[in-house]
Image (cartoon, rainbow, N blue to C red; front, top):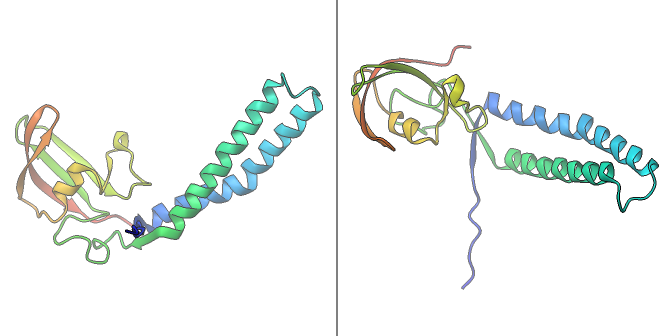
Length: 169
């Protein structure tokens, strides 16, 4: 029985797509040249059998080429969504990709704010969570005032949606 290859779709905001494009351009133009110069310098040292600089430069070159392939594939599989309205029906309610949400943890009374972004823009230390994360998945489709529970490592936590803002242009 032949297995069909499932075409993976990668969802990106326009901003996330542009970040991937910028990284790819930088790798292809600047980093490739830098590593080629390192290899040439290392070759000038002679004996390659004990040339750590040469080995390091070749490893860096392999990493850069691998990263370029990953980024090119990501761009080929990318579906760009409009992060101001939830993007092509990906969500069924008020909270969507691109929204900033103010939540209240009903267990502790603490309030926190998160922006729901694509996987490229995710940075939890800046309160930017991927739409693929469990919290974002629980939030998508919710409206102001909605309450929900989420299982976390410490147990169940109840949240209330206090406010929802669209991405600011």
